[in-house]
Length: 472
Image (cartoon, rainbow, N blue to C red):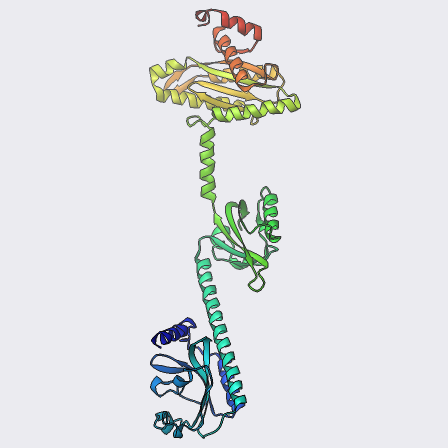
């Protein structure tokens, strides 16, 4: 019995029956019961551990009574309707203050409110101040109304939970730093959280009824449109995408959007999606910087060996398709070691930066100027007519580098030697072209420095067989 009472009180707590806000549905049931049975009082009573209280009532002013005088305490002991036709003739109630005093109960009929087998948490009862009988038909009718009360209590609990859930969701969504969006399957926005103002410069209401594709950067739109179509057709349930959204002021911001498909609660069919939109401008900039550092020289900001080799591989592949010519330049500064030895490495760095800037201004945007390390540089000249294009660029580079450089008030003069290999006539292997340009560079240095040479198969073979001292 003690265990049963504990379960019963837990059931009351689970239904959150402490709710005191009036609910017209229960009052309507009380009025219906009073009219149906011709009784002046009808109650929906909840029996707690020490008292009973009325979830709804008709014809009674009191809100609660002590449990030890409650008729409903007896009504919850069994599943059948509990009936007292004349309380003054029942020894259990003859001296009850509710009988001897107000409201002067003589007749009572109570149908238990049954949550589950054996768990009765209250009753629907009708009360009269005169004795009367209660037929079997009336008992069945009262039990039917009690079933409706239980169903309504369950429904009220579900509705309260949904209100709490919606309130919690809105609390989270309204205060999230991400912009939260709920959209129909056709991507029409139906809810937009306040974070829209900080992220895109729009008040949430300005975005309601709009579609995200309308504000996506044209370069990102095709892929984004395919993803939205996949969501709309429920081909995917979850997705993450990155694209640029246009802010209200016309600027673009990088965002990461996490999508989750939503489903109709009744039949489980897809009915829209929830998206969390996050500002990733700083992350994208950090990734860009990391990628740039991986492919560029830290001192001069020129392309490094890795980026140069990637560009050369692409140019070799392109030349095979189009029969284009290109040139690989191997460049080495003359007299640079003397600058480092006499003025120090900081002065040497200044010279390298100055020379790099001068050479960078001379190469086209479609060409690549790279620093391989020390005072060694490479140029990839693409889509050119050789050898005239290579000769013209080499002369401009030599002239630019030989201009005096001022380092801390000291004028420094250096030179530039260049070796050039031409593809595809000299080969279509990246390493091979580099070696050939390097051989041509040694010939340029041996020929007096501050000049350039093209790779020549026979001449460079002869140069390799000569004593190295002869070219020093």
